[in-house]
Amino acid sequence: MKKELRPVHDAVTCDVCGRTILKGERTEAYLAPGGHRHQVCDLCATRAQHQGWIRESAAGDMPQRPARTEQRRGLFARLLGRPQEAGSPEAAGMEAGSDSAEGSETLEHEETQATPPPARPRSRPKDPRHVRAVPTTAEAKVDRALNLFNGSQHQRTIAGLARTLGTPLVTAQPDAGQGSQVSVVVAWELSWYRYRVDLGDEGEPVEMLEKGEDINQIDESLREWNATLDADGRVLAGDGAAGEGSAG
Image (tube, rainbow, N blue to C red; front, side, top):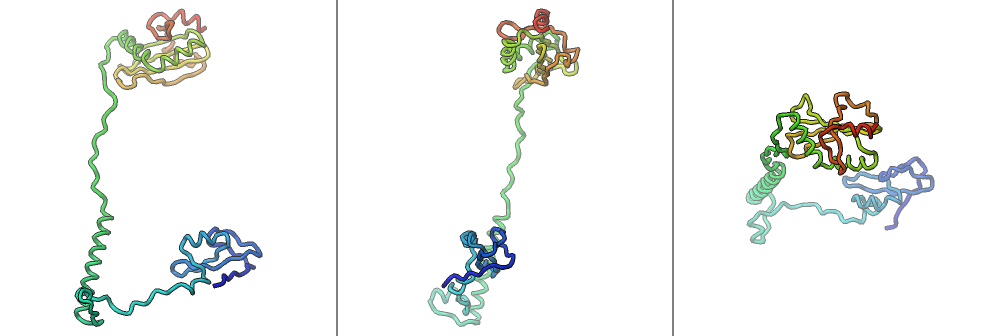
């Protein structure tokens, strides 16, 4: 059938892309499932067909579904190849039994899909941290903390900075509020870093808490400078007076 297009004079929009049709541009009527009628521009014809829409002009050429005039034959009639008379008791009984069986199968299938599988019992997550024994004296705590610090990646960072900025000021002292923690402060004139070493944490005991650019920002209690760096950039407990002269 010849494609029928009509000119658009009024303000019409394409039902696919939503674009207002320009004057002189043409649209074509499409029928969606359910018989809904839509206007489609030439650019969106392919998209409309992908959505299952058919051109209204071609709807008359499509074969219509034949009407179902006779009832479904019963099981015995289908097996024997003999049609049963519509309305007979046997046909009505077989039809009702078939519909009931199909309905039961459909309901059972829907219930199977709707019922979620039983939830698996949740197991308690394992704690990745392993607790280790904490020394009791302040000196022992500092020694243990510096050993942990020197074995971390933070020590390599400090060693690299020391090669550029010189020997820093270093403080290492137990935290008064947390018996298992030691504070380590490494400071230069224009840069400083504060670390926390948790002696009870066997996983990742060293953590950087804060850093700054002005040494006066450091709490006065953490400016005792009781440790220093050796030639390899390792933090050692001891008098930090030599470091103070280099940082100042």
